Image (cartoon, rainbow, N blue to C red; front, side):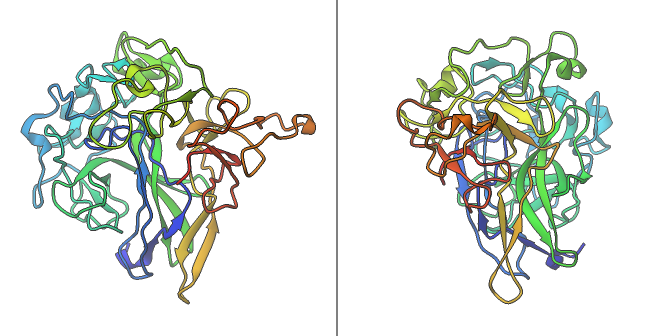
Length: 398
């Protein structure tokens, strides 16, 4: 697959990865549009990350020196392979089985000892130092891969997620996670094992076939206690976060309630709902206004509560640079099997009251909040550049 046979997303709606366990990305909304031409390296919009904590703050024993795999190092090429122990993950001794981290990742969103992979899989070890990654994401406007000999090969077993905003090239400026990808028709070219799910990160257009692929990384999302059984005895599912744990966190706020996030940047807001664990409040804002409490989901999996739709945050309009220099727009799709959030359905473009008698059981009277729509919640249509394919639903603005 030639690098020049692919081109990347120019602009559009929210491109979102749900749960990156990545230093420097805790609770942050870092959506960044980029441009590029037909012969440019694939473009990527940095993901909106679910509250995944800062591994550098609570590292435990997470892989030792094997995590710092620099340029030119050997690799195992086993990222994403189901495993039961590190011995299943290759001959070099680099990759580890994700169950290596059972009970070692501190506390996240009030959830103790979170385990992000219900089905253990092989992966490049988590970094041991804050701000130091294990792969090269390339320059801003590109997407690169990892755990393979060719970082431009979109079939590589790992995908390199930028640690910095703006994205900066460098052998330790990215974070390698097991890679997954699928066509907009829901056909997976590289899927995740067992109960692990694919979290959308970016989109590439094959210029030969004019087909779009959504590329992402494998992580959760558990939906029931049984989904965590491969981790061993005592593991249960914190359903609203899609994370396996040994002890569920009791929430004090319900879905749809206005909530506060830890905020952007490395300094967390200790009193925020994200940090106290009052609810899953995924998108960052300020100390007083953020988004609304919600829960994770899998498109085509267990249904969201009444009035909510499972949204993988795939743009309703995918915009690429056409051969004539204009924009080529391709309709997105809420791909079954992708991880998502339960977001409030709506029908009015300004988030106002809809006709409750219209028979639309999936719509809410208003984007969640009090008498006014929260600052970070607005009704967006799939046909809007800021809307998603699952909409219309209540999204954070960009």
